[in-house]
Image (cartoon, rainbow, N blue to C red):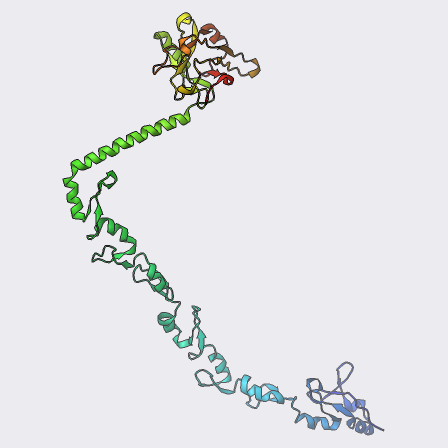
Length: 427
């Protein structure tokens, strides 16, 4: 009858342990019977290093002899470092991890003990390492400073022209466009000139440049060397004066044309004018002190190509309204398009004096209008000199009425002059 293997654990101290709770077992107390002990020692067991991969199994009495040769059993380091190492790992331990091993540095080939080699690694001067400037080169640790100072393509070097620092692999490209790099003078004078001073050199210092006369904007076409230009300027004062005078006259004509164009653009062409009369008190006082004080409005057109008109105002009255009323008139001025218009002027004209009441619903404006009489000379095509008075209302509004309502507020009066656009005849 075959004997079944009994799984009994044997500790590293040679003691048996209980397979249930791993407590030490006194074999003599448990099996006092010699016959029983003999049976146990003949039972089949596995090596205590079964889980580490040892495949040995045999009678229990042979286990101790097996452990003396088991490659998974730990023994003292052969180099006497004090470590317990499994026999299967002993060669690796002695070669790579034992502090008492002897080994050569792979870079400088110097022999060290294990612990000294670990300290030496990472500090060996012969070990190749990458440049800390990330230029891509690998140099021995002992040569890194020399590389950084003399050979590294990413080291900073000054431009020999401007002194600014650039990496060694870009300083040449910078030098090709450096503002301080010398360039030959385009006029082929002897002196090399920094690129950023070339314009000033050509303008002020180049001895070979053909310079224009300083009066070239006035029309002088002389060119020559700097000395020749200076001599020409001294000898041609009268000629230059004539050129400057001609330029001044031409510019004056251009300014007049521009002023006329601006004036045309600013003209009112709506057929209605709201005239703002400021400083009313001072102007009324002046009108009472002096005879014939007339205020005239800005000119305006009935349309873009229509009649040109202007309002006039006598604050202290005129004619039948003198000293008692404010008089208002409309004048027809000579316009640019009179030759294309129908004459006599026959459009309804109205005057409105605004009541500046704080409540618009209670405002009471004064409005007067008229239809021109075609037989009156005031409405015929004007000559170069317009009618001195115009046509309107000598007794437009009395001084008493001006005091009763808010026709004057904050010392300002507003008067609207409007031409009926339905009767405008224009191109």
